[in-house]
Image (cartoon, rainbow, N blue to C red; front, side, top):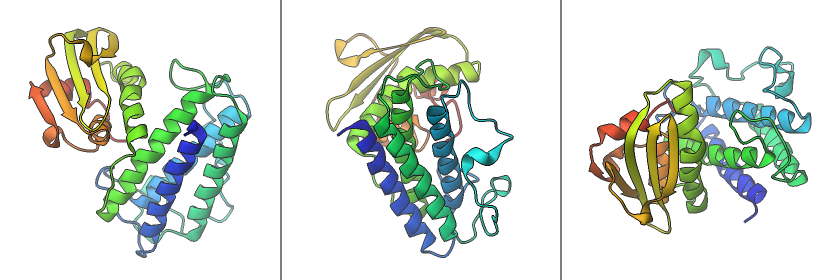
Amino acid sequence: MEPAARFRREVRAFQDAARQAAQTGAAPPVPSCPGWSVADLLIHLGSVHRGVFGIIKDRLDGPPDGSDLSFAGLPPDLTGWPDPQHAPNLGPIPDGVLGWFEEGAARLAALFDERDAGDPAWTWSKEQTVGFWVRMQTIEAAVHRWDAENALGVPRPIHEDVAADAVTQTFEVMVPARREWTRAPAGAGERFRFRRTDGEGDWAVHFDGPDVRLSSGADGGDFDVEVAGSASDLMLFLWNRIPADGLDVRGDKSGLDRYFVLAPPV
């Protein structure tokens, strides 16, 4: 499946979960994102989509100006809309919010179709390409779909192709970035292995000073901690959605907290 098509699939699944939540007449709280409701998820992800659209379309050299909300395309009358400053917003989800979200997601998907993955684009990572945003927004739509379904009590696993890619992306991008943002202590040679049990996937992560190195766990060697589980469960753990208790963990679990649970859910 082409990357943009995968993004569309995950966004549709999120939209389905959000509409199901709206049909309850309220905006259920999201246990995996403390302090947020499904309405807050809609505003968050919809705003991100429109911000990314502006970055790519206008070839910005940085994030949109946070003091200028015109990029978000909000209507003049926000009566009944969730207010991010008063989260969690538990009231009914207005149809206008759902329509606003769907329009922004569709515009971003169309832009992903127009641009090549290697086209330059500002990102918050070292990879400055449109392809980074396609990958990142696919993963984010998938995890927030799980969040929305979790709010309804029926979370389905993350699709295996997205989950496996998200595990790799976590080690290549998220963990190094979070360690830099949080000024995490330097590594002392610790090695972790994450092994997928429902398909191909074996990741070895080595912390050496400020560096995070990724290789294949199948290459062998000694590991301080080994973790095994489905691609979905590995991703959800690494994205701070589920605890390690449901995974097969061998070694000192405290090392997982030190190196991987480094930020609240996003």
